View 1: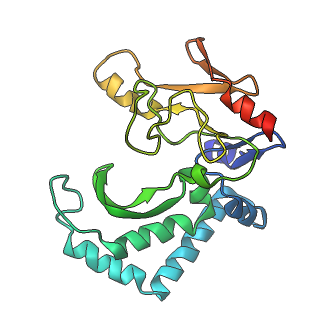
View 2: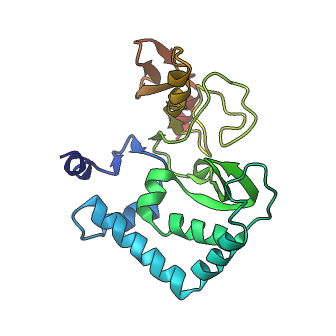
Length: 230
């Protein structure tokens, strides 16, 4: 019944005033899924996985990527290893992500990395794209997925570089992420300490964040000022 319930949920929510998606608002992906005649989310996901696999095999990308994986198999999960950017493996990973509109909406847009980096237990050849820097629509978007850092307002690295914790961001300052690294709570549980990371709800258009302990924080009015000029 859990799968049935999840299949009944929409991938995106949209009105004239607000858009909500888990990771990335990509209109092309949304339009593609709207045109789909398949009934379940699993059918849609599987269809695009199969389409991508077929493309990779026909273009020899998968074969070249497999050769790179075999060549560097002992290093790909070693954080101390030194290895070059494996462009074929990166191209395979990129196509597997970007050719699947389901993945784009739920785990974000990606680009080929400038250099390999170690994350999630392996060396990665693709990097997350700050899609909000190219989002031109006036309708604001609320997302989760990406881990903001509420405890480090002077963050100087990653997707939220120089973005304050209580700040709308992006090209038009109209994208907001409500996930303040809640996934890191496993570290708090492991060390048996109070939760240091949070997930919050956004009250819109009041621009108020509501946390699970009942506390609230007001988002600065700069976004309201921007909307008044649109």
